[in-house]
Image 1 (tube, rainbow, N blue to C red):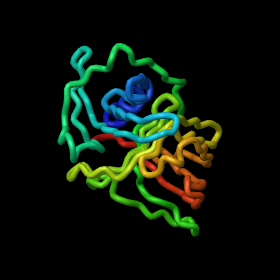
Image 2 (cartoon, helix red, strand yellow; image 1 turned 90 degrees about the vertical axis):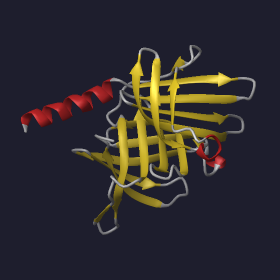
Image 3 (cartoon, helix red, strand yellow; image 1 turned 120 degrees about the horizontal axis):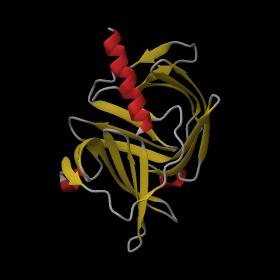
Length: 219
């Protein structure tokens, strides 16, 4: 039992130590490419600025072979057009590392439920194929809703975040369902309880929410 908890602790520490965020521009089309990655997971997102327009996103678990990343995607917003579920990928030399400092909430989090106004927790099964993942790395975030069996993509949003002394703040840079939400900043209260993160505030639509996110340990 002690060995089990030691392995879990080392895994969590390694995931939080290894985190990188890269960006680069495609000036011909006006695209910004962003990559968020930790020790075994990567998300690539493409969007336009001025005005902001979401283009695509894809992400999943990877293994590294020198500079080559062998990625098995869990989601691909362009799947209906390209049918890509796995690739060999090399981060371009022009990619700039834009990582900020490590934060307490860095990691892969799955939507695990909500807290009702009366304080009762309504939990969901995070092992099911329909998932909402929030990936926090070095001051950057992206949430993505997807189905690992059907490869259906439901939506995503991302940008920069901060978390300190119980206050969590998101500055939205792109939002696949509604480009007009780009540029908004949302503030929430948060607290951690072991592997759970309680998230309390108002959504980008102004609706109250009290969410439970749980740290993703395995696939």
